[in-house]
Image 1 (cartoon, rainbow, N blue to C red):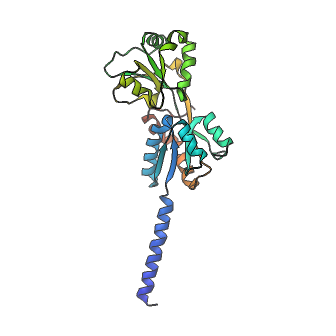
Image 2: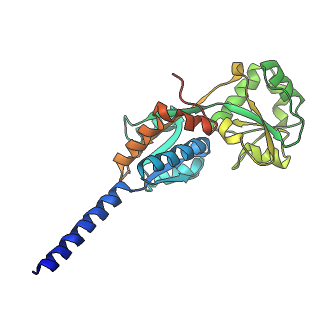
Image 3: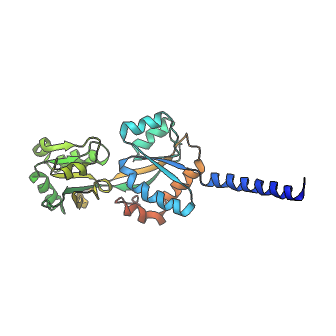
Length: 255
């Protein structure tokens, strides 16, 4: 083999090696995210990509659709969801890696009205109670943090008075019902209900009424990129990145 040919072969080999290394480092990290966790995941994923050069692919689905993907063992590396029930169940069923579950964020409920509509006071428990009694219709979801509302209304002693004007959202955000005028006032997880076109966000529930949903992440057992999955989860839980969680309308985990 001539010296020129040897140099050519060596160059090709080096290029192939570099290419293979780049493929490994740039391997996609596939993340399952439902509506409740999506905004936080988007901001964290974008920052992670910028910091590492690795690509994060977010797959969004709700309820039964998301569970169908998980049950079918479709390709994924990280799954996010409610704690403890959602992710603990996946660990028990062998869909998420035992010991990999960590909390990365929490969120409570907020309130919105149609853009330009009267903005009732919700700053205190009594003011919020009055706003619910005065509203012609109230919308909230039937899962996630939406489940807190019935107990809240009962605790305030108003459930029987308002139950007939409550509309449970189906398949779309509560804020979309508010924007269209289907309900006068909407309650949903803070990072989901705002910002939303056609609505005005009044703010979160008053502190004395707030109950938080906890969100976690775990490595999927079908993951083909566990190193990347673990790296992303570590980034998601790093206190240095808490500002990204707040940016999305969620909060870091309670200390």
